[in-house]
Image (cartoon, helix red, strand yellow):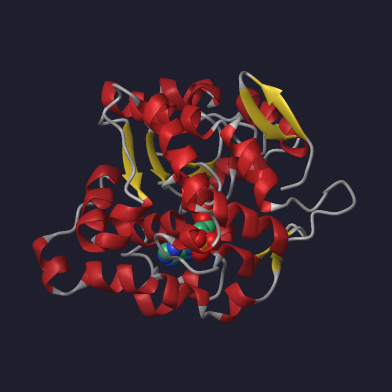
Length: 296
Ligand code: A3P
């Protein structure tokens, strides 16, 4: 982002998020019914928020009256480290009806203990590193991060990414942390890929709903509920809503900056084949033996 980073527990964090993250670690008390969405930035967080909110609330709001039509997904599903936690516990959290859904960019090992210790469920979504990097570079240029931020050239951002120095990097540590947690306890951690959602949203929405403990009944399936939710949460639908074209989050992040292209493979327009090769080789070595790979 061109913003100063600090290394904490082997992870690079934006300096401005350091204290809020510590506060979340110290104060967040997860409930068994909570759903925690975890992501590297620019990996499909906004999409996953819209989908999980819609799945959990499908009997509360009819799709054509969904709060998503008038609120940015980040307002409905807050970031643990951004919107809620400042320095102390926030009593309003207790009043949020179950299932409470939160998101965070924290690495698995940084999560507040109560998330690991309770029966709450974690849904992780990641994205191929080339698209994630390109998406992040655009995101940074679309938002004005103020006087502390230097504009970052693609070459420089790429080089730092390869060294693991990027917001919530290293990328491979973030992904592997959740991948291993998923392998250890698949009932606790669902592991999703952005590309799989793009390829077959219906089966992924079904999988997410089952994991959340809100499976679709046969009747709902016959009524087209899955298609309705997928349609509402699609890039085309959300990016065209007035609420997502205007306004901002906390006066810093433009709502529109969360909706750019929403495609797989846009990296080919920005990274050279040599750059792509370097990242692919890096991932091959980092993910060797893990069973994890990305389609680009
Ligand atoms: P691009 O910059 O490649 O377009 P995050 O939500 O984690 O910040 O990630 C943002 C990326 O997800 C952006 O990618 C954005 O366009 C894309 N995105 C946002 N909403 C989406 C949706 N409903 N469906 C698919 N992609 C979406």
